[in-house]
Amino acid sequence: MLEKNSPINEAKNFNNFSMGEKKSVPKINLRGNANNKDFTSKVGKILGIILPLEVGKITIKEEISTICTGPNEWLIVSNNTIEENSSSFELENILYENISKNDLGAVTNVTDQFTMFSLKGSNIYEVLSKSSPYNFDTLFDNSSAQSLLNNVDITIVKKNNENLDLLVRR
Image 1 (cartoon, rainbow, N blue to C red):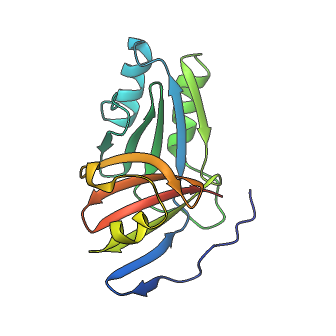
Image 2 (cartoon, helix red, strand yellow):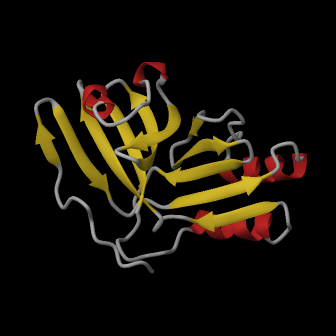
């Protein structure tokens, strides 16, 4: 398990803007051929959702959010937290047994690879646009995009106009 040093230790609040780290949120990278019916049907049955096929689209279920990050790549993010020093995520094991072991795709736990920040407030986009080339007006609710923020790769997950998550590589 990776020794994690949190970039921010407490939620920060500024003029109608708040930011806090979401700790211990399991994340799985899933790769596979979206045109392979065996792959999509097995994943669909396991997750209980249909995989989004358009890059940037998100499918949300009570326990997980599935983000299409590439033509044959998805990031599955838990909507729940796990114990701080635990690397156990039951969904990863189920996907690995049914997808990776059957050569239908690849399942990788990337929980330690990313940290996640929750941003809230009415001026989120004003703050982010100061250091990102991305046009935030093009981002719809419940969608995602990948961009740069001060030359750092980020994945933006927009929930609504005043609430988004940033996934940043550690």
